[in-house]
Length: 450
Image (tube, rainbow, N blue to C red; front, side, top):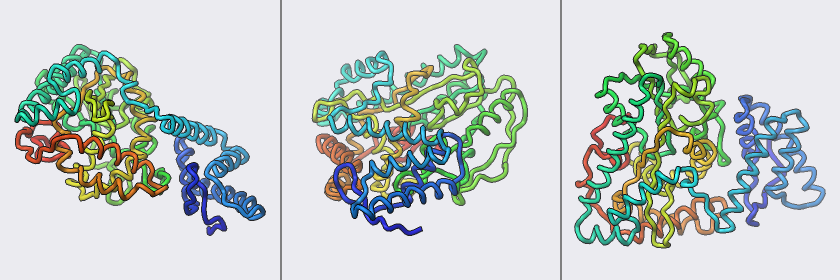
C-alpha cells in the first residue's frame, strides 16, 4: 500500500524518508511480546495508522513527527481491542525514552549495575594486582614485552573461575537436573560450556545438550527490528511453550522428538533426533536467554543451576571511565562474524543496536538472579582488537558522522575508536593458546565450537 506521506521528522529534528514497514514491524513486535503471531493483523493496523496520518497531514500540509506516529499507533491498538499489545508497545516506548534521556544527559547505563558488587570487586582487585586496571598500565606492560605474561595470568584467572563454577554445581548434584549457561552476545558462552562440561564429566556427571536454537519460530512469523532486519536476539523468537513442554517431559524420563531449525530456509523442520535422559543425566542449555523467566518457567527452581558469563573488564580507558562490557563484546562479534560468516564488520555495528536493546531488556537485568557469575573478559584481547579493527572504526566515524539514521552506530564507533587508539597494538596472536576462550572469536580454538 503506497502512502502520501513521504517524510517524517525524527526527535533530533532530522527529516528522513517515511517507511510504513517500520510501523508494521513495531506493532508486530509488540504483539509477539504478548504471544501474538498474526502479521496480517499488524499490516491492517498499520494501514489505519497511515490513513489517520494522511488525513491529518494533508489538511495541515505538514510533515509528521515520530512522536505523533507513535501516539497514533497507541490509539489504533486500543480502539481495535488490542489492549495487551498496546501495553507492550507503550512500555517499550517508555523504556526507549528513558534510555534516550539518560544518553542526552550524559548518564550511561552500565551493565555492572546488575552484577553483585563482590564479583566486580574480585575482578577489579585482580586487575590492580596485575597492573592492568587502566589502558596506560596495560601499555606499559606490553612495551616491556610482557604480553605473553598477561595472556597467561588472564587465562589462569578465567580457568579458576570455571573450575569454581563446576564445584558449585557439584555441591547441588542431588537436585540439579538442568544447567543453564547464559550471557549476552559474544561473552564466551560456547567455550565456557565446553570447559565446564569437561569438569563435570570428570566428576562423573553425564551432560546432555539441548540446543534451543532448534526452537526458533519460522522466519515468516519472526519479529523484525525498526530497519526490517529479522531479530534473532529476542526470546520471543523462540517457541518458549514448546521448550518448557519438552523440558518437563525429559525430566520425567520421557523420550522427546527434538525439532530441527534450518537456518538456510528459515523454517523449523520435523524432528531429526529423539532425546531421552537417564535419572543421573543433567540437561545442559547454552543460550543467550537462559535466564529469561519464560525459558524454563515450568521447571522448579531447585532443579536448575543458572550460570552467567559476562565480559566484566575492570579497566579504565583513556577518558578515565571504565571500558564498557558491550564494546568489548561488539569487537569480539565483529572479528568472529567476519572470520566465520564472511560478514562485513560494518553490518555488525549497524546491527548492534537491537542486539543491545534485547540484552538490556531480556538478559542483563537477570544477571543478579544467577547461581554463579564467570568473568569472560581478558585484558590482552584489547591490543589484539586494536590491530584488527582500529582502522575500520576510524572509517565508520567518518561514514556515520552526519547520518541521522545511524546515530547509534556513530556514537559506538567514535567511543571504540577513541579507546583503541590509546592502546599499543599486538599483531601476532601466537602467545594466545588454543585453549583460550578468546580463540572462540579470533580463531584457532582447540574446541569444537559448532
